[in-house]
Length: 543
Image 1: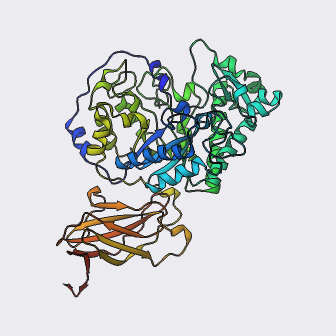
Image 2 (image 1 turned 90 degrees about the horizontal axis):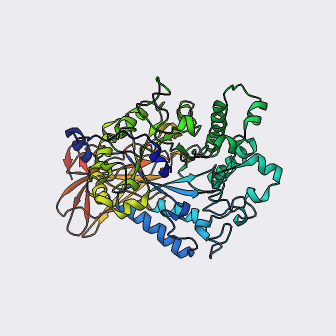
Image 3 (image 1 turned 120 degrees about the vertical axis):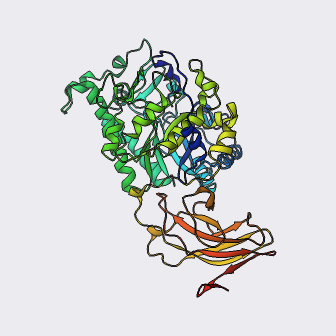
């Protein structure tokens, strides 16, 4: 995430944005489906793990604790940085283990059978939280100490001639060269390896493509790519268009690779929050005055990727406040919502700035995040939020965690569906048994019409309505609970049922694309003193 680059925005003063009645109303209107995610940054141990070199037991405990808290906050997706800088938070023969995990790049964990990524995915899924693998693919190192790299890192293993093709040095880091076809294939293979071996719900890239320009350092000199541009077999006259095309080729290739092997795996990008300023692009640019932009400075044409169908969602990092003159949050949300080409939009929000900004007093106000989520919910094209990052939420500055947990995210929300990734509608569940204890109603169900593996539900949602009859499934208050992913037993206990009351239960299956199946037949139940009694109707009379 590009935290340090926000001051590059031109600053022309502040103005106060009053919270309207509409925004106040929208805060309490929790939608039935809403992305509620957070990035877990591992680079420099920003969020996780707390330090390098922890034991396997400590790594498990820390990640489980994060999942417990996220679950308690009613979050439903996590975006974990599993490749910070040419390395891995998973077991691999082609990529060295990250120094931010094991202390020295390529070192082993104390338990050689333990695979951190495998465990993290299972922990997230057990908490009914989607796991998206976040990769920084172009950043080859986090410093210039190449001697500290593991021998299998290509900056160590390749010949000098190949290294000159694959890498360039800029500032205090080494980067993979986006212009190299060999690099593109190598990085695509890294993604392919993850998709094939791990049960990830998504592959996620952030805003690091060509690197951010640094003061007093020439990116052109570092890239030294004019000869490659001039001698290449292409149609481009402008080197900037050629650089953008290098990234386009890579994104297209990654997309096709993911969909070839696991079509349900989502592929998304979290670009810098300003694509282009209106000054540079009067037709499609946003009414902003950002000092850098995704298209012109990072060579990332995100709109093209959506238009071509190469990505499934976009999560722009709109890390500015409502009313910030150079890049107003509300203006940018509106702009992105109008340039989606049918793809989903999640808004990247700056948890790290809450009560922690030197040039924007709006971040010192408790209501800033509430305003932002109200704006999101008022826009029908916005499907939720991603927060950078999880640790600021845990610190609870200005009570933001309390506000999310007790007000804005008080009710459980489903992950927004992606019908284009769905092969078949999930099979319909049938409630086959109702019993209970003095404290619970117990429901068991099965599938009677499963025709193919594609129809197997990934998880189930249980809805409960007071009295007899089925109410609105899109009211979050009627959503009683969700089963874990890949639940071994199709069974649920309702601990909130009150003795003597009548309830109607409905169960719905969902697939990997979060597309819902048909409702089960409703089951009418009375909570009794010692359990529960299923009621049935014959000719309109209860028996």
